[in-house]
Length: 412
Ligand code: SF4
Image (cartoon, rainbow, N blue to C red; front, side):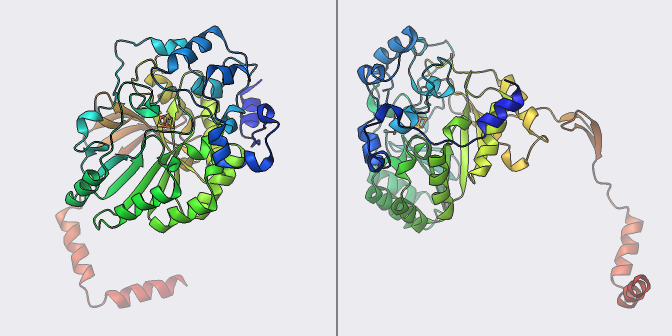
Protein backbone atom coordinates (compact mmCIF):
# COMPACT_ATOMS: atom_id res chain seq x y z
CA UNK A 1 0.00 0.00 0.00
CA UNK A 2 1.40 3.44 -0.91
CA UNK A 3 1.46 6.28 1.62
CA UNK A 4 -1.42 7.98 -0.18
CA UNK A 5 -3.52 4.80 -0.16
CA UNK A 6 -2.79 4.41 3.56
CA UNK A 7 -3.76 8.04 4.16
CA UNK A 8 -7.01 7.57 2.22
CA UNK A 9 -7.98 4.45 4.18
CA UNK A 10 -7.11 6.02 7.56
CA UNK A 11 -9.16 9.17 6.97
CA UNK A 12 -12.41 7.19 6.49
CA UNK A 13 -14.85 7.11 9.41
CA UNK A 14 -16.15 3.65 10.29
CA UNK A 15 -18.58 2.47 12.91
CA UNK A 16 -17.33 0.14 15.65
CA UNK A 17 -18.84 -3.31 14.86
CA UNK A 18 -20.12 -5.60 17.60
CA UNK A 19 -18.67 -8.78 16.26
CA UNK A 20 -17.79 -10.26 19.67
CA UNK A 21 -21.02 -9.14 21.34
CA UNK A 22 -23.46 -10.14 18.60
CA UNK A 23 -26.11 -10.99 21.23
CA UNK A 24 -26.12 -7.40 22.59
CA UNK A 25 -29.09 -5.29 21.56
CA UNK A 26 -28.54 -1.87 19.96
CA UNK A 27 -29.93 -0.31 23.11
CA UNK A 28 -27.41 -2.19 25.27
CA UNK A 29 -24.51 -1.39 22.96
CA UNK A 30 -25.33 2.32 23.04
CA UNK A 31 -25.64 2.37 26.84
CA UNK A 32 -22.38 3.41 28.49
CA UNK A 33 -23.26 1.48 31.65
CA UNK A 34 -23.58 -1.70 29.60
CA UNK A 35 -20.24 -0.93 27.95
CA UNK A 36 -18.56 -0.51 31.34
CA UNK A 37 -20.13 -3.69 32.73
CA UNK A 38 -18.95 -5.71 29.75
CA UNK A 39 -15.34 -4.54 29.67
CA UNK A 40 -12.69 -7.12 28.84
CA UNK A 41 -10.72 -7.28 32.07
CA UNK A 42 -9.43 -10.83 32.40
CA UNK A 43 -7.28 -13.25 30.45
CA UNK A 44 -10.25 -15.60 30.04
CA UNK A 45 -12.50 -12.86 28.63
CA UNK A 46 -9.74 -11.77 26.27
CA UNK A 47 -8.90 -15.28 25.03
CA UNK A 48 -12.57 -15.99 24.41
CA UNK A 49 -12.45 -13.23 21.82
CA UNK A 50 -9.01 -13.37 20.24
CA UNK A 51 -5.81 -15.39 20.01
CA UNK A 52 -2.94 -13.82 21.95
CA UNK A 53 0.77 -14.08 21.31
CA UNK A 54 2.93 -15.57 24.09
CA UNK A 55 4.22 -12.03 24.84
CA UNK A 56 0.70 -10.67 25.23
CA UNK A 57 -0.47 -13.61 27.33
CA UNK A 58 2.42 -13.15 29.76
CA UNK A 59 1.78 -9.39 29.79
CA UNK A 60 -1.87 -9.89 30.74
CA UNK A 61 -0.90 -12.28 33.54
CA UNK A 62 1.51 -9.69 35.00
CA UNK A 63 -0.72 -6.64 34.49
CA UNK A 64 -2.66 -7.26 37.69
CA UNK A 65 0.36 -6.20 39.77
CA UNK A 66 0.99 -2.99 37.89
CA UNK A 67 -1.66 -1.41 35.72
CA UNK A 68 -4.88 -3.36 35.30
CA UNK A 69 -6.14 -4.37 31.88
CA UNK A 70 -9.60 -3.19 30.95
CA UNK A 71 -11.03 -2.61 27.47
CA UNK A 72 -14.49 -1.34 26.62
CA UNK A 73 -16.33 -3.42 23.98
CA UNK A 74 -16.43 -0.32 21.75
CA UNK A 75 -12.64 0.05 21.78
CA UNK A 76 -12.00 -3.71 21.70
CA UNK A 77 -13.87 -3.97 18.41
CA UNK A 78 -11.33 -1.66 16.79
CA UNK A 79 -8.57 -4.26 17.28
CA UNK A 80 -7.45 -6.11 14.18
CA UNK A 81 -7.31 -9.61 15.63
CA UNK A 82 -5.28 -10.95 12.70
CA UNK A 83 -2.56 -8.34 13.04
CA UNK A 84 -0.19 -8.59 16.03
CA UNK A 85 1.07 -5.07 15.21
CA UNK A 86 -2.37 -3.48 15.16
CA UNK A 87 -1.93 0.05 16.60
CA UNK A 88 -5.05 -0.28 18.77
CA UNK A 89 -3.90 -3.63 20.11
CA UNK A 90 -0.44 -2.33 21.07
CA UNK A 91 -1.94 0.52 23.09
CA UNK A 92 -4.28 -1.55 25.18
CA UNK A 93 -3.16 -5.18 25.50
CA UNK A 94 -0.31 -5.65 27.98
CA UNK A 95 2.93 -7.23 26.77
CA UNK A 96 5.78 -8.97 28.60
CA UNK A 97 8.10 -6.03 27.78
CA UNK A 98 6.25 -4.03 30.46
CA UNK A 99 7.99 -6.21 33.05
CA UNK A 100 11.40 -4.74 32.14
CA UNK A 101 12.39 -1.38 33.58
CA UNK A 102 15.03 0.53 31.63
CA UNK A 103 17.66 2.41 33.70
CA UNK A 104 16.23 5.82 32.75
CA UNK A 105 12.64 4.95 33.65
CA UNK A 106 10.74 6.23 36.66
CA UNK A 107 7.53 5.41 38.57
CA UNK A 108 6.63 9.11 38.64
CA UNK A 109 8.30 10.47 35.49
CA UNK A 110 6.79 13.96 35.75
CA UNK A 111 7.68 14.38 39.43
CA UNK A 112 4.03 14.99 40.34
CA UNK A 113 4.18 13.52 43.83
CA UNK A 114 6.83 16.04 44.88
CA UNK A 115 4.64 18.96 43.71
CA UNK A 116 1.52 18.00 45.68
CA UNK A 117 0.75 20.52 48.40
CA UNK A 118 -2.43 18.53 49.13
CA UNK A 119 -2.99 14.90 48.10
CA UNK A 120 -4.57 14.89 44.65
CA UNK A 121 -3.55 18.45 43.77
CA UNK A 122 -0.41 19.06 41.71
CA UNK A 123 0.76 22.68 41.78
CA UNK A 124 3.86 23.01 39.61
CA UNK A 125 3.19 25.99 37.35
CA UNK A 126 2.57 29.44 38.85
CA UNK A 127 -1.06 30.07 37.87
CA UNK A 128 -2.62 26.67 37.31
CA UNK A 129 -3.11 23.33 39.04
CA UNK A 130 -3.78 19.75 38.10
CA UNK A 131 -6.56 18.20 40.16
CA UNK A 132 -6.56 14.37 40.15
CA UNK A 133 -10.21 13.57 40.83
CA UNK A 134 -10.26 9.80 40.26
CA UNK A 135 -7.85 6.93 39.67
CA UNK A 136 -10.20 5.01 37.34
CA UNK A 137 -10.52 5.03 33.54
CA UNK A 138 -12.85 3.30 31.09
CA UNK A 139 -9.85 1.41 29.64
CA UNK A 140 -6.16 1.50 30.56
CA UNK A 141 -3.40 2.67 28.22
CA UNK A 142 -0.22 0.65 28.58
CA UNK A 143 1.94 3.81 28.52
CA UNK A 144 -0.03 5.69 31.20
CA UNK A 145 2.09 8.40 32.86
CA UNK A 146 0.22 7.82 36.13
CA UNK A 147 0.29 4.03 36.03
CA UNK A 148 1.73 4.20 39.57
CA UNK A 149 -1.74 5.13 40.87
CA UNK A 150 -4.21 4.64 38.02
CA UNK A 151 -6.44 1.51 38.08
CA UNK A 152 -5.64 0.73 41.72
CA UNK A 153 -3.55 -2.34 40.77
CA UNK A 154 -0.13 -1.00 41.81
CA UNK A 155 1.30 -0.40 45.28
CA UNK A 156 0.54 3.32 45.37
CA UNK A 157 -3.00 4.58 45.91
CA UNK A 158 -4.42 7.96 44.92
CA UNK A 159 -5.70 9.73 48.01
CA UNK A 160 -7.94 12.70 47.38
CA UNK A 161 -8.60 15.08 50.25
CA UNK A 162 -11.51 16.99 48.75
CA UNK A 163 -12.02 19.64 51.41
CA UNK A 164 -8.30 20.34 51.81
CA UNK A 165 -7.97 20.63 48.04
CA UNK A 166 -10.85 23.12 47.75
CA UNK A 167 -9.52 25.14 50.70
CA UNK A 168 -6.05 25.26 49.11
CA UNK A 169 -7.58 26.58 45.90
CA UNK A 170 -9.63 29.17 47.78
CA UNK A 171 -6.52 30.40 49.54
CA UNK A 172 -4.24 30.48 46.50
CA UNK A 173 -5.56 33.45 44.59
CA UNK A 174 -2.83 33.08 41.96
CA UNK A 175 -4.56 29.94 40.61
CA UNK A 176 -6.71 30.95 37.68
CA UNK A 177 -6.89 27.65 35.79
CA UNK A 178 -7.79 24.18 37.12
CA UNK A 179 -7.30 21.05 35.03
CA UNK A 180 -9.31 18.04 36.18
CA UNK A 181 -7.63 14.78 35.33
CA UNK A 182 -6.91 11.41 36.93
CA UNK A 183 -7.80 8.73 35.85
CA UNK A 184 -10.70 10.02 33.81
CA UNK A 185 -12.99 12.70 35.27
CA UNK A 186 -15.79 11.94 32.80
CA UNK A 187 -16.09 8.50 34.39
CA UNK A 188 -17.50 10.17 37.52
CA UNK A 189 -21.27 10.26 37.81
CA UNK A 190 -23.08 13.30 36.43
CA UNK A 191 -23.95 14.37 39.98
CA UNK A 192 -20.44 14.12 41.33
CA UNK A 193 -18.90 15.92 38.39
CA UNK A 194 -21.50 18.67 38.66
CA UNK A 195 -20.77 19.07 42.39
CA UNK A 196 -17.01 19.37 41.80
CA UNK A 197 -17.41 21.89 38.97
CA UNK A 198 -20.00 23.89 40.94
CA UNK A 199 -17.69 24.09 43.94
CA UNK A 200 -14.79 25.23 41.76
CA UNK A 201 -17.02 27.86 40.19
CA UNK A 202 -17.67 29.40 43.63
CA UNK A 203 -13.97 30.38 43.79
CA UNK A 204 -13.87 33.84 42.21
CA UNK A 205 -10.23 33.85 41.04
CA UNK A 206 -10.61 30.60 39.06
CA UNK A 207 -11.24 31.93 35.57
CA UNK A 208 -11.07 28.80 33.55
CA UNK A 209 -11.69 25.05 33.90
CA UNK A 210 -10.27 22.22 31.86
CA UNK A 211 -10.93 18.48 31.77
CA UNK A 212 -8.54 15.88 30.35
CA UNK A 213 -10.40 12.79 29.16
CA UNK A 214 -10.05 9.72 26.95
CA UNK A 215 -13.74 8.80 27.51
CA UNK A 216 -14.85 10.29 24.16
CA UNK A 217 -12.56 7.70 22.53
CA UNK A 218 -12.96 4.67 24.80
CA UNK A 219 -16.62 5.19 25.63
CA UNK A 220 -18.32 7.69 23.29
CA UNK A 221 -21.70 6.49 24.61
CA UNK A 222 -20.88 8.36 27.84
CA UNK A 223 -21.13 11.71 26.02
CA UNK A 224 -24.85 11.96 26.66
CA UNK A 225 -26.97 15.11 26.20
CA UNK A 226 -27.31 15.17 30.02
CA UNK A 227 -23.53 15.18 30.50
CA UNK A 228 -23.13 17.94 27.90
CA UNK A 229 -25.86 19.92 29.69
CA UNK A 230 -23.87 19.73 32.93
CA UNK A 231 -20.58 20.68 31.31
CA UNK A 232 -22.02 23.71 29.55
CA UNK A 233 -23.27 25.13 32.86
CA UNK A 234 -19.66 25.69 33.87
CA UNK A 235 -18.19 27.66 30.97
CA UNK A 236 -15.52 28.67 30.19
CA UNK A 237 -14.67 24.99 30.21
CA UNK A 238 -12.30 23.36 27.73
CA UNK A 239 -11.81 19.61 27.15
CA UNK A 240 -8.61 17.94 26.03
CA UNK A 241 -9.35 14.55 24.57
CA UNK A 242 -6.64 11.95 24.06
CA UNK A 243 -6.39 10.00 20.85
CA UNK A 244 -3.31 8.57 19.18
CA UNK A 245 -4.37 6.90 15.97
CA UNK A 246 -6.93 7.79 13.27
CA UNK A 247 -8.62 4.38 13.64
CA UNK A 248 -9.82 5.53 17.06
CA UNK A 249 -11.95 8.24 15.44
CA UNK A 250 -15.07 6.25 14.60
CA UNK A 251 -18.48 7.57 13.57
CA UNK A 252 -19.65 7.13 17.21
CA UNK A 253 -16.67 9.12 18.47
CA UNK A 254 -17.30 11.85 15.91
CA UNK A 255 -20.96 12.07 17.02
CA UNK A 256 -19.93 12.36 20.70
CA UNK A 257 -17.40 15.07 19.90
CA UNK A 258 -20.02 16.94 17.93
CA UNK A 259 -22.36 16.86 20.94
CA UNK A 260 -19.64 18.43 23.07
CA UNK A 261 -18.70 21.00 20.43
CA UNK A 262 -22.39 21.92 20.06
CA UNK A 263 -22.46 22.50 23.84
CA UNK A 264 -19.87 25.22 23.21
CA UNK A 265 -16.93 23.27 24.60
CA UNK A 266 -13.62 24.06 22.86
CA UNK A 267 -11.93 20.73 22.12
CA UNK A 268 -8.22 19.99 21.84
CA UNK A 269 -6.38 16.70 21.44
CA UNK A 270 -3.32 15.37 23.20
CA UNK A 271 -1.49 12.47 21.56
CA UNK A 272 1.46 10.48 22.79
CA UNK A 273 4.08 9.58 20.21
CA UNK A 274 4.30 5.78 20.34
CA UNK A 275 6.54 3.35 18.52
CA UNK A 276 4.84 1.27 15.78
CA UNK A 277 1.54 2.99 16.65
CA UNK A 278 1.66 6.54 15.35
CA UNK A 279 5.35 7.25 14.68
CA UNK A 280 4.88 8.01 10.99
CA UNK A 281 4.10 11.25 9.19
CA UNK A 282 1.31 9.59 7.19
CA UNK A 283 -0.48 8.32 10.29
CA UNK A 284 -0.09 11.68 12.04
CA UNK A 285 -1.32 13.56 8.96
CA UNK A 286 -4.43 11.35 8.81
CA UNK A 287 -4.94 11.79 12.57
CA UNK A 288 -4.77 15.59 12.58
CA UNK A 289 -6.99 15.89 9.50
CA UNK A 290 -9.59 13.58 11.02
CA UNK A 291 -9.46 15.54 14.29
CA UNK A 292 -10.19 18.76 12.42
CA UNK A 293 -13.15 17.04 10.75
CA UNK A 294 -14.36 16.19 14.28
CA UNK A 295 -13.99 19.88 15.32
CA UNK A 296 -11.01 19.08 17.54
CA UNK A 297 -7.83 21.15 17.41
CA UNK A 298 -4.65 19.03 17.65
CA UNK A 299 -3.02 20.53 20.75
CA UNK A 300 -0.01 18.56 22.01
CA UNK A 301 2.02 15.69 20.66
CA UNK A 302 3.90 14.30 23.67
CA UNK A 303 7.23 12.63 23.64
CA UNK A 304 6.39 9.52 25.72
CA UNK A 305 7.30 9.95 29.38
CA UNK A 306 9.96 7.73 30.92
CA UNK A 307 7.40 5.43 32.51
CA UNK A 308 8.53 2.15 34.02
CA UNK A 309 8.22 -0.63 31.42
CA UNK A 310 7.61 1.65 28.43
CA UNK A 311 10.80 1.31 26.36
CA UNK A 312 9.07 -0.89 23.75
CA UNK A 313 6.59 1.96 23.15
CA UNK A 314 8.92 4.94 23.20
CA UNK A 315 10.56 6.55 20.16
CA UNK A 316 13.48 8.95 19.81
CA UNK A 317 12.90 12.72 19.98
CA UNK A 318 14.25 12.88 16.41
CA UNK A 319 11.26 10.84 15.20
CA UNK A 320 8.83 13.44 16.56
CA UNK A 321 10.82 16.34 15.11
CA UNK A 322 10.80 14.65 11.72
CA UNK A 323 7.00 14.24 11.88
CA UNK A 324 6.51 17.93 12.71
CA UNK A 325 8.85 18.83 9.88
CA UNK A 326 6.59 16.83 7.54
CA UNK A 327 3.46 18.58 8.81
CA UNK A 328 4.50 22.24 9.25
CA UNK A 329 3.88 24.14 6.04
CA UNK A 330 2.57 21.01 4.33
CA UNK A 331 -0.86 21.20 5.92
CA UNK A 332 -3.28 23.51 7.79
CA UNK A 333 -1.62 25.31 10.68
CA UNK A 334 -4.61 24.50 12.91
CA UNK A 335 -3.77 20.84 12.40
CA UNK A 336 -0.25 20.99 13.79
CA UNK A 337 0.16 20.04 17.43
CA UNK A 338 2.98 21.42 19.56
CA UNK A 339 5.50 18.62 20.09
CA UNK A 340 6.56 18.65 23.77
CA UNK A 341 8.53 16.67 26.30
CA UNK A 342 7.95 16.76 30.03
CA UNK A 343 11.29 17.51 31.67
CA UNK A 344 12.02 14.21 33.52
CA UNK A 345 11.45 14.44 37.26
CA UNK A 346 9.27 17.57 37.19
CA UNK A 347 10.64 20.06 34.66
CA UNK A 348 7.25 20.75 33.10
CA UNK A 349 6.50 20.89 29.39
CA UNK A 350 9.33 21.85 27.08
CA UNK A 351 8.45 22.62 23.43
CA UNK A 352 10.40 20.73 20.78
CA UNK A 353 10.61 22.27 17.33
CA UNK A 354 12.58 21.48 14.18
CA UNK A 355 15.36 24.00 13.54
CA UNK A 356 13.81 26.78 11.51
CA UNK A 357 16.34 29.35 12.74
CA UNK A 358 19.62 28.60 10.94
CA UNK A 359 21.58 31.47 12.45
CA UNK A 360 21.06 34.54 14.65
CA UNK A 361 23.28 37.53 14.10
CA UNK A 362 23.08 41.09 15.37
CA UNK A 363 20.34 42.75 13.37
CA UNK A 364 19.09 39.67 11.50
CA UNK A 365 18.09 36.03 11.65
CA UNK A 366 18.63 33.46 8.95
CA UNK A 367 15.61 31.22 8.56
CA UNK A 368 14.61 28.03 6.80
CA UNK A 369 11.08 27.49 5.45
CA UNK A 370 9.23 24.19 5.07
CA UNK A 371 10.73 23.72 1.59
CA UNK A 372 14.26 24.20 2.92
CA UNK A 373 14.57 27.60 1.25
CA UNK A 374 16.67 30.12 3.17
CA UNK A 375 15.48 33.63 4.09
CA UNK A 376 16.93 36.55 5.96
CA UNK A 377 14.68 38.53 8.30
CA UNK A 378 16.11 41.87 9.47
CA UNK A 379 15.41 43.38 12.88
CA UNK A 380 13.61 46.76 12.72
CA UNK A 381 15.76 49.83 12.04
CA UNK A 382 15.24 52.59 14.62
CA UNK A 383 13.97 55.82 13.05
CA UNK A 384 16.77 58.42 13.13
CA UNK A 385 16.21 61.62 15.13
CA UNK A 386 15.97 63.91 12.09
CA UNK A 387 13.25 61.82 10.40
CA UNK A 388 11.40 61.48 13.71
CA UNK A 389 11.41 65.25 14.12
CA UNK A 390 9.99 65.76 10.62
CA UNK A 391 7.26 63.20 11.29
CA UNK A 392 6.32 64.93 14.56
CA UNK A 393 6.14 68.27 12.76
CA UNK A 394 3.86 66.76 10.13
CA UNK A 395 1.65 65.14 12.83
CA UNK A 396 1.15 68.51 14.51
CA UNK A 397 0.75 70.53 11.34
CA UNK A 398 -2.62 72.39 11.19
CA UNK A 399 -2.72 71.80 7.43
CA UNK A 400 -2.37 67.99 7.72
CA UNK A 401 -6.10 67.31 7.15
CA UNK A 402 -6.19 69.59 4.08
CA UNK A 403 -3.02 67.97 2.82
CA UNK A 404 -4.48 64.40 3.13
CA UNK A 405 -7.85 65.38 1.65
CA UNK A 406 -6.09 66.95 -1.29
CA UNK A 407 -4.05 63.79 -1.82
CA UNK A 408 -7.15 61.55 -1.55
CA UNK A 409 -9.17 63.66 -3.98
CA UNK A 410 -6.34 63.26 -6.41
CA UNK A 411 -6.53 59.49 -6.21
CA UNK A 412 -10.32 59.16 -6.71
S1 SF4 B 1 -6.96 7.28 29.91
FE1 SF4 B 1 -5.30 8.62 30.62
S2 SF4 B 1 -5.17 8.26 32.80
FE2 SF4 B 1 -6.35 6.56 31.94
S3 SF4 B 1 -4.86 4.97 31.51
FE3 SF4 B 1 -5.05 6.17 29.64
S4 SF4 B 1 -3.42 7.71 29.81
FE4 SF4 B 1 -3.72 6.88 31.88
